[in-house]
Length: 362
Image (cartoon, rainbow, N blue to C red; front, top):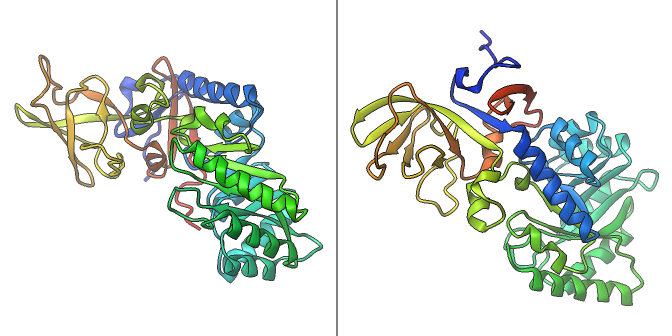
């Protein structure tokens, strides 16, 4: 049996919990704020859809001035291609015949598909699935200190670019990194050395792509970059506020939850557990901040229950049946926990949006 959904015009205080709420005004303000910054510094902006996974929000971002979008997996990109997006960058090494077949079919559907690679193995696999009749654009992913994927030096980036150039069915599109926050100097040094080496060899590098939300407003310090990618900024979360990227008041996503038990004076139990709140700590000691009770501590999660330590709350404490709003530690993960997002303005439901790319892991 399908559960009842929120209705347009309904007060959020009437909604069944747990569920995520998106504040329309804060969402629009976050989109506008970042796009203004990018425009003022002449940077193309490519939002990452991992945070929302919703074509309608990507359309808002593009309407505001974004040049294209960033996906992480082929299946995500397929959803957005079907929704009409053409300029898609997939920032993940794609390996295996099934994925390559899907990638080739996607490349045949849209005009602006781009992917990344950080090894000759990945490049050879991509080359085997594409032809000069419909080549695929490939960027070299560089590890500028983030410690995840990427070639380890400018020399390795140049060598892999040369491999892409000579690989049948592929076009060299540029270089890309996902760096640690606040490492703009190191990113710029890596990019500058790579670009100098490519120039000596007469190799054009159309795209120089930097990324990340936490130090997004320092993106202009990477003077070699042509574009910046970011995802979390669209909703923001507790971790972004801690990093100084935004304030807690800029967080567009709240999780609405209900107090279902008060076993002791110092403990409350919520109906939001790990199936509604991410278990990501991201350096915090608890699992989100209760907006109306900031001194309360969400100390533990099981699947259906959230345990709240009220010992530090002075004065009134939440009662059984009371609804509370929670700012999650990591908003992107919460998006993948729900089929539908409920949007509101001033506490009144404005729209419902299917999380179209939810659960698409390859």
